Length: 416
Ligand SMILES: Cc1cc2nc3c(=O)[nH]c(=O)nc-3n(C[C@H](O)[C@H](O)[C@H](O)COP(=O)(O)OP(=O)(O)OC[C@H]3O[C@@H](n4cnc5c(N)ncnc54)[C@H](O)[C@@H]3O)c2cc1C
Ligand SMILES: NC(=O)C1=CN([C@@H]2O[C@H](COP(=O)(O)OP(=O)(O)OC[C@H]3O[C@@H](n4cnc5c(N)ncnc54)[C@H](OP(=O)(O)O)[C@@H]3O)[C@@H](O)[C@H]2O)C=CC1
Ligand SMILES: O=C(O)C(=O)Cc1c[nH]c2ccccc12
Image (cartoon, rainbow, N blue to C red; front, side):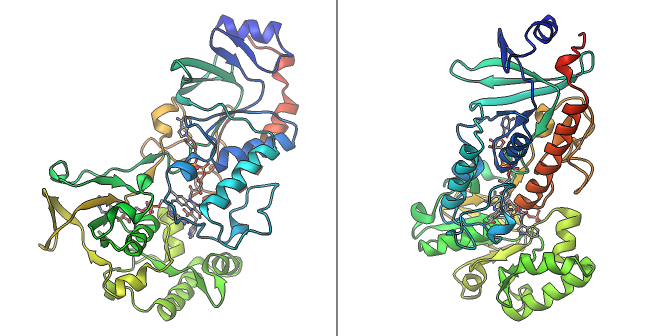
């Protein structure tokens, strides 16, 4: 505690004050240098507020750089995926490639002079009520040392996809072949001629199955429940763009009915392929349950042609084969878990009610989840992808600027 008192008292004008691995940050601390963290830091900077970004990985946008497959492109048109204050280059195609998106994010960081501190995993963050400051403990760096960063504001930007979901499947430890999560999958190159079971039919599972086909592997897809598959475009426009326009005028149920009718025209009856549609419509389900509809990029054609088999839920895994709940058994050489991701906020953010312990998302849904108490903020937990992150980032920067102008803490050091 002496440290905070001392630094606040004596070194009020130093930008970063270091003392035995306890560092006072005059601006906000942002945890995570993905698109959400970068967008918030840029919006703050444009309002004259410097921030410090702490990142566990070694680069910006680590999800995109290190944990995604080669053929990935944005699924939504680029103008829905732009970060605030800097558009995509006009030379980019409507659906930029992963490499283009990463290049854009790197230029974004450079343009705004954002320099995250890499190799800093936040292990604990808690609000110290005695001095009204956030204490953020990290581990990392050359000698894996512990550091405490202290600030009035904490922005959680660790994302909806911070940790892989690894399901418990009966007998999976007995499986003889490779088992990997889609976050480690790069391409179907290593699976040529192999029989591969893809578990999970979100956007990742559907696209990885298609990629495997393109490398002459033989994929099977586990669809344990129901799924909405929509065409990426209809009537020459993006399905997402049409949806957002219609939602301005019509209730979500009406828009869903339109989307389902159009999907039926473009894609045919997906139920017959083993992809049974949920009872709730695609947008209502996204809003209520956070389940993203699959935007088809060619997988359905491969299912229809028999290149991708569809199976129901797994019952158990054996050394070289898998049994499904309908009693069928098939041999496989590899298993790819396309079982999604989860937030990691409950693992490190302590003593705050803003986030739900169970799912690690803000308790208040979009558009109200961005602000908590005591200078705590969340960016990028909207279930609306990059668009939601951009909306949050702007609001957070505006709010912090107002607070900073109202209560200049450095002029009124508090006592710990
Ligand atoms: C394969 C894939 C494709 C996608 N495509 C799209 C798309 O086309 N359009 C769209 O809108 N959305 C898409 N998404 C959704 C995705 O969530 C966003 O694109 C975007 O990456 C979210 O940004 P973020 O900064 O909130 O989270 P992330 O990009 O996940 O960034 C969070 C950062 O926080 C860091 N971090 C996590 N925990 C800690 C910790 N304890 N300490 C320090 N650092 C930490 C991580 O290392 C990471 O760098 C896609 C997601 C995936 C998985
Ligand atoms: N180009 C793009 O824009 C892309 C975007 N994305 C986005 O990234 C995010 C993550 O996507 P994704 O990785 O597909 O994860 P998702 O969470 O969207 O999908 C996970 C899938 O795994 C299933 N599942 C989970 N556990 C099991 C289990 N034990 N047995 C069988 N099935 C299981 C889920 O089924 P159930 O629904 O029954 O729970 C669901 O179908 C999404 O927001 C997605 O839209 C991903 C890829 C490409
Ligand atoms: O890819 C994601 O996770 C997103 O949240 C963006 C997104 C893709 N398809 C959608 C359909 C409805 C709302 C958001 C998305």
